[in-house]
Length: 259
Image (cartoon, rainbow, N blue to C red; front, top):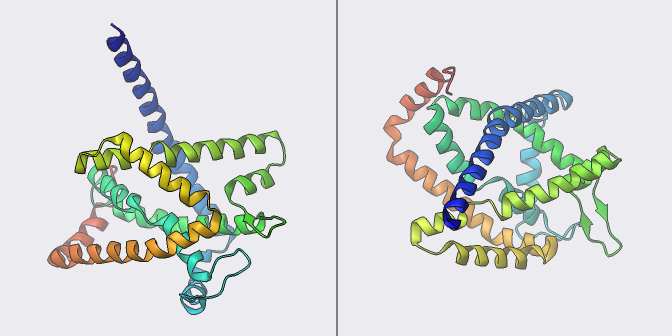
């Protein structure tokens, strides 16, 4: 009886979570994200186009693999790899695959459009983080969404939203990921073992502060990026004869409702 009641409770909870996720993902978040991207694009006079050349020169012209540390305590190369680590991951693969499975090849067109406007959004996030960062007495630096949310709304609402964001991001990245399930399905490793390993590894890295995070990313991200690009190229080369047809399908099916 207890097991049956527990099962019904889990099914009810799952239904509630799926319903909330449906409305958040399919309606609210999409509208907010696209609207934010358009807003920041207009406010910055399309910085993603206007300053694209300057951005490339800053990234590839100034950073050094063994460059000196800056005010934040990390080198320019470490800053670059830390930024890449936050942007390139399984979502770029699984998310794109999921979109194509659900919306067809035309979904890629809309991913391009949203990515274009999203460049202005992430630029705005980076600028806000720099403008609202806090330098402590020991020289360490703190910043990010929690700080610029509180800066923008200097009242109880701002404190609530900053706290809500902090808790939500911990839950989303720390407890609601699919690493344990993926490893269990692929290699048969029990989920609780992977959970403990990932938690221990994350604690070791994050509790070491920005310097340890940068030290880890400068070693892992180049390997990750090379593998990411290498296997992508292998797939493209292996199916190169289908590339012209694929581009045709992307534009042909772009305005199908599912896409």
